[in-house]
Structure formats: structure tokens, C-alpha cells
Amino acid sequence: MNVEKSAHGSGHWQQLERLILVAGHAVYVGQNQRSAGSDKSWVLRGFQKGEPPCYIEHVRLGVELAASESKSLLVFSGGKTRIEAGPKSEGQSYWLLAEQFGWWQKTDVQNRATVEEFARDSFENLLFGIARFRECTGHYPKVVEVINWEFKRERFDLHRQTIRWPSDGHRYKYQGVNNPDDLDGSLKGEAKTLAAFKQDPFGTETTLRNKRERRNPFNQIPPYSASCPEMSDLLRHKTAGGPFFTGPLPWDLLFTGGRKL
Image 1 (spheres, rainbow, N blue to C red):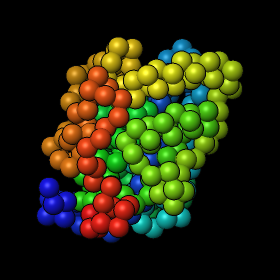
Image 2: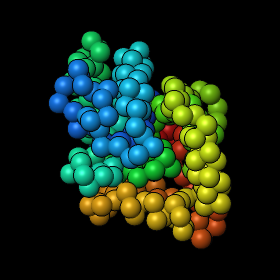
Image 3: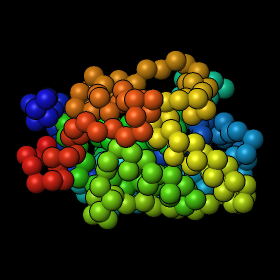
């Protein structure tokens, strides 16, 4: 499909080139910035207690980076993962948190910020974040910059390889903002998750698939196969069909001297 002819991105975003992706961890339900760092302002899992101030730093860095890059789109990614939060997504709640903080005096970023509301894990954060950029701008980003925990750096790099996004520092950057206080416990859990993704890169089999199902209590269906048809085969690929996707990808042309998408 000709991407240029199928582009329907918002007019004021068509010149944007960089995706700044903040991957969510929990749903923020607070009412004001004074209590934003409190556990009570978030719907948390047991192991996430005490982490909200770290999440706020993820959001803040995303805003700061977007403010410093005039051609960037800031995407807060994360689905409606917790039934206790009602139909509020992680991504939407991060956007509302930034609004409560007045975008840290960088209010122009609000005009280049959006949400991605279907991702259920880190792989989908990256893949769906790129798809959301395509929805908003009508084309794919030239640069992807991910903001998350430092201890998840290797996992996101694995996801990058899985979707064949280039490793060139001019095309992919990872900002490991901080780590949880219980880093030892986090690293133990991360080792298991990383091993699972190495065995099942697309997260479509067994344990990872079951986690996604649990994190989708409202039975949301991502729209990206329809809105980003160039990605549809990748979006539908399952690890059982082979650990690697070998079909064409829209960014193959973008980064190999072919027609600009």
C-alpha cells in the first residue's frame, strides 16, 4: 500500500518526525499534583507500592524531551489494564497527570502529545506506539525514543530487534530514567520476563499471552491493523508462525534509501 496516499494524519502533526514514547506502568487516578506521588493516587499491584514518584519522573522527562524537540510527538502508552480503575487507560492517566502538573511550564508540549490506549505489555508499548504515531501524523517516525525503567533497557532492545527497528543511535534511543527501590526484586522478575520474551518474542503464546488477557478486562481490540495497514501482517504475526517476522515492513524503505514514507 502507498503510505503517502493512505495518510490521514492531523494537519498540524504531519511535519513531526520523532516519537517520544513513555511506556505506562499503572493507572493514575489522583485529583491533584499535591498527592500525585502517593500510592493512593494510583491503582497499583502489590510489587508497585512506593513507585509512583518514579512514574512521575518518566512523564516529566517525556515532556522535557518533547519540549526540546520541536518535531516530536509525545505518546503516553498503556491500555485499560485494571478493572478497579474503570475505563481509564494508563496512557490517558499519564496525560492527565502531566496536565495537573501544568506540563512543568512547557505547555506548548500539550499540542504535541497524545495517548495510546491498547498496549498491555512492553512489546505492545513499542509496537503500538509506532502505530499511534502513524495514526496521528500519516507517516512513520524517523526516530523512536523510549522512556522507561533503566532495568528494562535490554528487554526493549529485544523488542526493537523483533520488529526490526534499526539500532542506529540516530534512529533509536532508550532513556532509562530510574529504577525501583527494590532493584534486586525487580531484576529477578525481569530475568523471568526477558527469558519469556526471548522464547516468545511476539508474546502470543502461553504465559505472555495469558498476561495480556488478564490486562485486558474490558476486552478492548486494538484498531491498528485497520489504521496502519502497512503494519497489519506484523501486528497479526504470532510466534508460533516463526520467532522472526520476515515480511516487508514500512520502515525498511524509510531507512534503506528507498522511497520516503
